[in-house]
Amino acid sequence: PGPRALGEMVVAALVPMAQAPPRGLWRTKGGVRNVALSSWLGRPVDPPVTDGADPVGRSLVKRYLAAYGPAATADLRAWSGLAGLPGAVAAVRGELVRFRDERGRELLDLPDAPRPDPDTPAPVRFLPAFDNAILGYHDRGRIIDAAHRGLSVAGERVVLVDGRVAATWTVSEDAVTVGPLGTLSRADRAAVTDEGRKLALFLSDGDSDRVRVTASPR
View 1 (cartoon, rainbow, N blue to C red):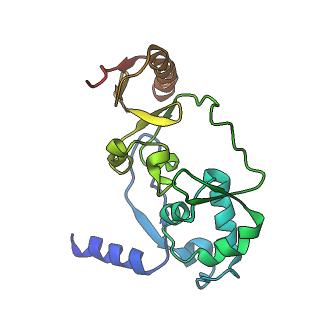
View 2: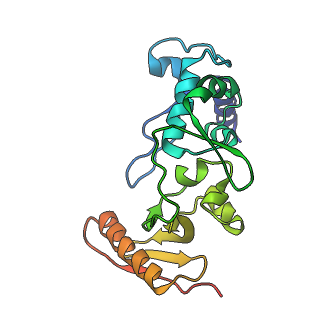
């Protein structure tokens, strides 16, 4: 990379930074703009605290579990990219409930969090690239098969059927195209098509509800 890009990479790795607008613009792209976190906050950045006395760390653990629990500490670490949270987890452990998964790993959750019955139907959902429903865990096998795990970091948009990744999707000017990763039942195919129509209407501002579902791989 050129000296400017390399310098930005080094600074972003060593100095607390925030990405400022125009990133994340609707239907267009904007260049990366980094600003010092202290400038973004309008105050000096607090020094890191790695033990259980850190209220931010304890809050982070609870906020993560509120969205993704039950989850293992490895899942929290993979999602946050932070290795210094054992003290925060230990500090709030007494406020959490614990489970064991099929592999014997400890899973933590908030006591009043919803935990639906395993047989509860999960509706079809079209997810954007790099969605946290997949990236929020170290063990992504709970939502995506090992054979397709690479899709989660390849920028592919995926479709959930009964809570698991079952297809990818793309969009052109006139249609949403769904590519099944395996065989879809007639009912699942109909549900995917119905949800795809809603997405097509949204993305086209109501001009098109066209959906193409390609043949399942043999």
